[in-house]
Image (cartoon, rainbow over all chains, first blue to last red; front, side):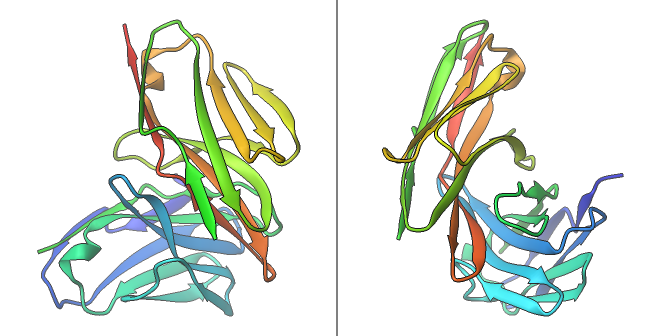
Length: 113
Length: 112
């Protein structure tokens, strides 16, 4: 079984709809991250959480919110989706402490029409 | 601020050696990662450098010079399956947090 899972894997939604992307991990890591990837722009950090009670904005948090329901679960919400939020979204985890590698989920391809 | 530069695309021949460069300017540098990403898939870890010098791991090696803000990934004995994007990412430390800042990636095409 995969250590980091994301649901859904693909989603098409309409402008203005609320949508939630979910991430679960079995690695026992405290730190979790949400990134989006756009062609030519690389991965950009949306939000990150270093434990259940810790939520931090990343580089591009506007239009997004997150919830850390448990150590193993970190969800990303688009309150009112817009077409420029069409992208590939990745969840990642890492162990506590500086310098540890991040383990990525398989990604969610989101299209907003 | 932070700025990470990598070439957009590179082409190499099967069996050859290729070097992918990464330059960075960032405050609070605390290490550099290289990730491999096949199209439509998740990035996977290749290497981590925090001290100056060369780290070798099988066919892949990574080099870091902190004073020059420079790293490279060296791929030897190229195989067709090495065709992928290679992402340079810098750990930015500070304000009690660690974050990975990614470059845009280098798309490598390996030809027969």
